[in-house]
Length: 249
Length: 249
DNA sequence: TCCACCTCCCTACTTTTAGTAACCTACCGC
DNA sequence: GCGGTAGGTTACTAAAAGTAGGGAGGTGGA
Image (tube, rainbow over all chains, first blue to last red; front, top):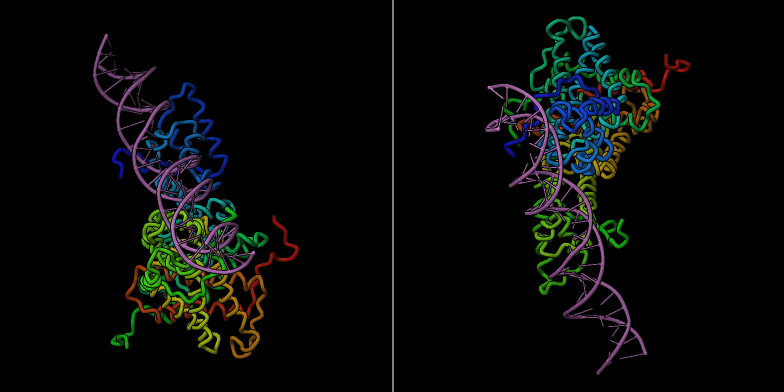
């Protein structure tokens, strides 16, 4: 709304990794500029790292912009000028972590060649990522606070596009069961992507209370749960459209 | 925290239904007491109905206790005395709607007898409920704002217990595939409940953007997706435990 | 009859926090 | 020297959560 937010949208070289080390690195970078004045992008990196840490520590409502300013060692208007409003900062954190996750999953998927292996490798990458960023994942990606449906939804849509691509990729260059091509309709494909993503996310949530399970087991187990149904769908192609000519009674 | 909240925990006769009609009914009931003084439980019902409406309208952070007091026609300390803090009010709304949902799903499940029919009937009841309470479901049950993991988690655990019971019920009195009993381990059963619930919830979220699909189609389609995997799990019993003697590399 | 007490209810605060207005200062190119 | 700009601050406003402390009116008992 405020017209003067120079914002944080066009920076973020996607190079930063999350975690306390990111904060320290950014802090060191800031410290090299001795007498107060620090270049904009350096401050922004530092503040985003601090913000992620803060949100993960305290949650969205629990975190305050004053606290962020204090930790960054600047005054509040600086915060607003550099990274915008609280929601925008939260959005930026979500987006950064979401991109990191999408990258990890994509790497996992592309490391395999068959349909099932891709699903399992992608799932494994997903679970490993969650394990490595449990707290951040919970706060930023799993716990979709309402005002941020935009951003969280965005990221999830991205995740689901990946899943959809994974499932849809089958028809072009390979097949599900020997020779059955997967030409599910686009509507069903979209629904499938959401459903499968939801299953993964939920299982990751459950995993939080059962840390003794290893991610490989999770990925394999979930693949075992989903694969037969996907195969069956590829075979039978059930539709989500209303039966033709069968209006409501 | 405040010791003097008389709260809302032990009332709620579970008779109230949600929606604007509930608000109007409660308001009429309040209006019968002419000169200000209104019995406690009547006010509480009214305020909870108004609160749900307000949260659904504006979301958690967007809703204010001042506004709630204004709408209820009382002063703010009354609100705090009657229904506690903002989070407690939100919790109460979540709990009420969650109980209504659990009841609806349980009714659906118990209307069927075979394993697959139960799953489909329960799913249908779930989707119908979501359709009938879309906005409230989104705000109160789907969009788990972080501070309320307790309540939302509670309700979801309840939902998942239902799903788990549905799956676990199979071994005692019926079988999945002719004669194969379903004695999946308790850990796997719990994971299964979470995963399946997550799939349902995600699909319901997707449905919000595709209202043309009918709930019967959704339930049938999702059952078609999940059933083969569940059958396979009952047959092969894949485990989530680490392979014995296979420590991390 | 009078008194203690309980229920319902209000005005008027305190504190915290998001967000902003207006100003300052040093350096950099010219 | 000098204007413009990047980096920065103090000091505010507005809104909202939650509380302190009190008051009116009815009810039961002595």
